[in-house]
Every structure is written in C-alpha cells, then in structure tokens.
Image: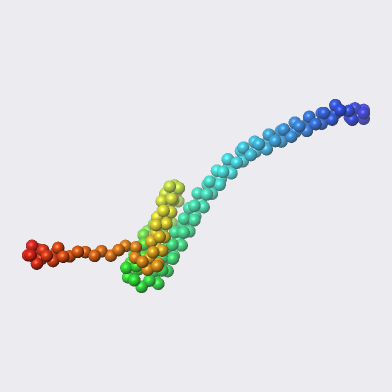
Length: 154
C-alpha cells in the first residue's frame, strides 16, 4: 500500500487538487476585488463631499474671523466701510449656512457656488487688507447742473 502512494498517479492527483484549489482561491479573490472596489469608491466619494463641505465652512469661518480683526486695524474710512459691508454679507450667509436645516442638504453644485463666492470675498479681503478700496469713489460732474441753474432753467 505504501508503494501506491509513491506512484506518479498519486502525484498527479495532488497537483490536480492543488490546481483546483488555487483556481478557486483566485476566483474568490477576483470576486472580492470586484465587489470591494466599487464599495470603496462609493464610500470615498461620500467622504470627499463631506471633506469639501467641511473645508469650505472652515475657510468661510476663517475669512470672517480675519475680516473682523482687520476692521480694527484699518484707518481709511472707505476701506472700513467696505470691510463692514463684506463682513455683513458673510454674516448673513453664515446665518443661513449654520441655522437653516435646508443648508445641510446643499448639493455639490451649490457648495461650489458658495466656494466661488468665498474665493471672490477672499480676493476682496486681500485688497482691502492692503488698504486698497475695492470700489472707486463716484465723482459726479455737476457742471451741467450749475449751467442749468445759472441759465435759470432750474
């Protein structure tokens, strides 16, 4: 009986069994990867949306805080007024984003719009913080009015 175990036929059976076991292990691994990768990608995309939302809110709050500090350091009344207007705009948006229940369900398109507004506000803040007014003062031309008064039309 011991002699039968040492024959070539026994070895072929072991190799065939090993091949079948390896085939099923590889098949199981491929099935695992085929199921695991889409689940992982979906979970990562859900987390990516959350990361974008959290980073947007963090930048938003940081800009409001920096704007509040910079108002106290400015001396030009026009720059101070524009900074206060920008801060009021950001505070109004903050009230909506932090208190309204619908804001927690913003689509990614709306979050991108908020990010775009945040970038615009950051550019304005950078200019204002350097003492440069964002808007230019109006210089009305009153000569036509003076001429009309002088001619007695008014």
